[in-house]
Image 1 (cartoon, rainbow, N blue to C red):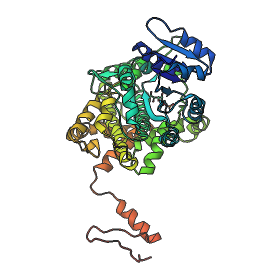
Image 2 (tube, rainbow, N blue to C red):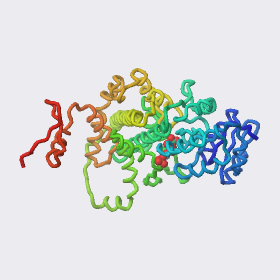
Image 3 (cartoon, rainbow, N blue to C red):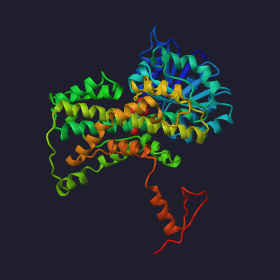
Image 4 (tube, helix red, strand yellow):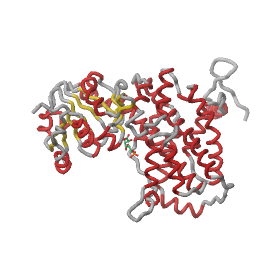
Length: 468
Ligand code: 6PG
């Protein structure tokens, strides 16, 4: 008793794999789950290499762990986290540490921190990314909040994290719920990039009528270029996969996309903070559009647009789609990172965006070669308000913007929905506009509501009695 280094509550795929990862790094790990099947299946993994014990009994579980105890919750966000905490509390002692490793909404973490501090329990939220394989062999982890508690556990987290050039993809990020907030925005960016990739795939297929081998090969080849990233890599794998009938599996998969809410949270909170993240918004919207299948089937027969733009050479099409995707992906990261910049001020997180981009280089779902460019940009200027203002990133966007302009024109003529690409380009064009037509909006507001406006040629606040 009291000899285990670490405990995990929730032995679903993530909890089980993270526990096995910890045990593989020679830390003794205890697991708790109410489901005896999950407990038995994990218990079978205990051997000379893996010191672990799994149980359904909360008292026994807590008793296994050395004090001050470190217990991570890997249960679904929301009520299950509160229930898990309530079941542990009677057995814990002052000074013990609880870590929430789930996709928890950041304000829940702030609330739980206050509640648990009053009981002498250290609590912090730590976003974990990388899916089931990442959890087993090296995730990216985003801790925030109680720094002392994190420091005590740092050796375990650094041992199990993904490594890039020998550096672990885990680092303390900031105060309060910083860890959960950064993970939420990670997921928002994930939504945006997935949407963009699906639009490019659609353009290849329905737009340029490329055959399936050519499409698959393009993604495989792009993963050897500046587009190299986990999401491009898995797209190449997915497009290769055949089902049991020898058919391409992708063509048998329903187009109704599900979601667990983290993309929506990113958009909702960006609106609260008045930070534009239109590519992420479009990604959330398009998942919602995908749900209305019966309506879309009916609309396909009623809302007609027949147009066939001139045929394009396949190699040319692939080249411009590649630069289009690269451009729009950079813009998506720019939006998410700008949101983190504002959130850090608003919620007093004290985030260092060089650290964030550094730990996103490996292990997580949005890991990509471009993260190293972003890390360098923040290393050069820690206060950069938006990565679009970095000279190297700006040069890359200026070079690649031709492709996206041509591709969007083609999509519009073809009648294909490319909301993610359009919003990415609109963000770029709005951001680089010294003057926007919002002066007219100000005038209209003043006209109908006497909301006042500012002038460019004189200080102060003005109202006009507009002529009807
Ligand atoms: C990760 C993933 C992970 C999860 C997504 C899926 O970083 O490992 O983001 O957290 O797979 O939340 O989200 P949706 O179900 O909303 O697409």
